[in-house]
Length: 211
Length: 211
Image: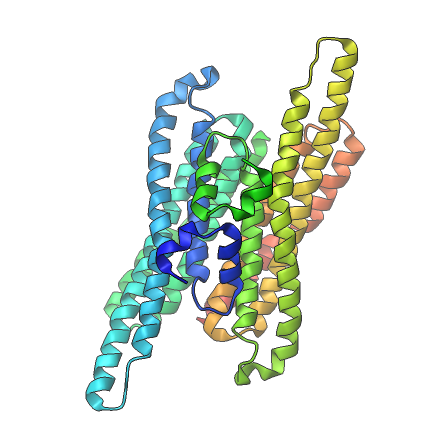
């Protein structure tokens, strides 16, 4: 599929292509879309809180949160495309000729470079997903309680995006020969993942208790 | 937004409308889309396993799994629309006139009927999400190991859909005056949710260990 146009596909077209035997779009794009869904739901809570007399006390906070969640949504949208491009780059590198020793070396180098990008892209998605989780917490704690369940869906979508992006970091980092690079990315991922289970559960329970 | 056309919106249009201050689409539609994403990724694993000589031993299983995941995806797609319709029906009932005693009674009855539908719809989404999780397990256990990370994303998307749909059951069941009806729905939900955390974690770890 044309990577440029994923966000302009209809939902049904996207899901058809996701289900198909084409290697892209795959789990990486799905993770970015779930992240985008999380940010959009936090924005929805903000938009349904701003301007309501009952919530005038948190009006400025909700305005600031909305700016953050909309910027984050834009970031995630870019990641849908970046994921497909980085995967295709790995596949293209594997497809390079390997008849001569020189070709073999060039191919091996291209694969390694592509794998580094394919590790960095989902790591960025994981980082953004952790931000999405923390934005959903603010929406859950300060937003209009009539739409607090949407903040609860935002946290679950952010969590699914985070755990999904992590899988794509693991798979690509594992094939990188520059062990220092790979380990640095895995260490950063562990920091991002740390406490995310607990935080997600806390936000979810906070929402559930308000229903 | 026109409920008939959600699946025909572009991803970007859908996310814009999700983020907007329109009450629909909201978390219920997002849950159904995450469920649909889960089913699509299980289908993808099947489609990238079927026909591969190395996986001829599971060919029939993958064919059967693909049929189930595609049928489930179709179910979820219908739920996006059902969620919006049931929400709008609740809102319409609250908007009924309440000047006279007769009007008040008619409105109260309409609200209660609408809430029952608005509880049953996400309960159906929760049930389908639990199926999505179990289908992702088969994809993770038998599918092409080259795309096993997509089965891992499928389980996370299914889990997020399940927990999200549950919030919409809680919120609507809580407002139903027919306590026997509400309790029966909540009991069914608890059965669906039971062990889903553990199952999701097991499938996720199985995938992670293969990467």
